[in-house]
Image (cartoon, rainbow, N blue to C red):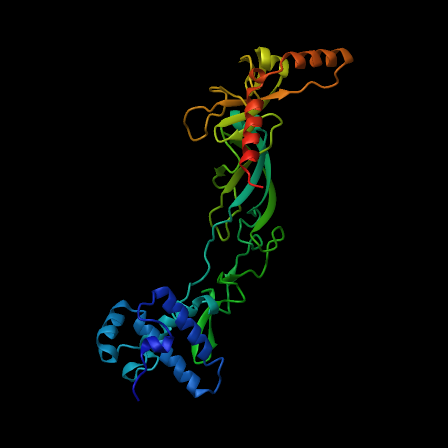
Length: 378
């Protein structure tokens, strides 16, 4: 009987990528898998056919020969060709590549026994005031973590004893399981991949080899850090298992909101309230900075929204570069709680400033509004 086109078997186009080819094979193979279709000879044949097609098309050299000469170019090279059946290791390689994540290992030698494992990294969020973030500081933090158990030296076995080789897997950490007509390797359920078991566990850590402990650490925060920046403390994470190295601790910065300043990269922003008298006549006002108060000269006729830049009063970036600036935005403040006399004075003032020359922005705004409504077609 003539063989079907390999691309047709897997339901893919000839320009299919390797990734999509694997997905297609996995879909077909799972559909016709013998374990899902017990006693169905037709399904088993389709499963074998799909496996042969994938073995040829997943190999760049074999695929090229097939594309050029068809089945004649690859006869005897597939896992099913030449009467080889599933021998020669061809199918087991495919199985491990495509189904390894499902069954816990391919047809090869497996991952072996579990050896020393590195401890987990930890993260600690450090809340900082803006002043400390800009100028730098040193703080003490308390971090709960897992440390190596001292009484058993991290082995998990009671002092004077030691772990013994697992009898289920023979110390390799893996066991071979039969899946239909082929076998796969899985993590040993007795020792969970360690290859050893503890018959007399340590009373302190109960055989875990690690205990929970809260450490007090001193963290030096460099000047200029911002929210999201991290400091790595090497070896201050969780202890490893079976003598593995300790993980790291990452201290992540979270800068609190400030009552006066807002930060934007290396620059600081703040709003400065100014009385309408000082804004009209001009004057000198005090402006806060992170280094103390400074004098700011406000010119006469200053309007709300005017920005004044105080150079070098911002933040020195933690990664280097020039120091930022402080940008002060003027906000004209309307007087409140006026006395009768003050109200009369304001009325007299209002009567004295009638005309466009005293309120140019207001005049231009009204002219623009008239023009807008005049252009509208009702």
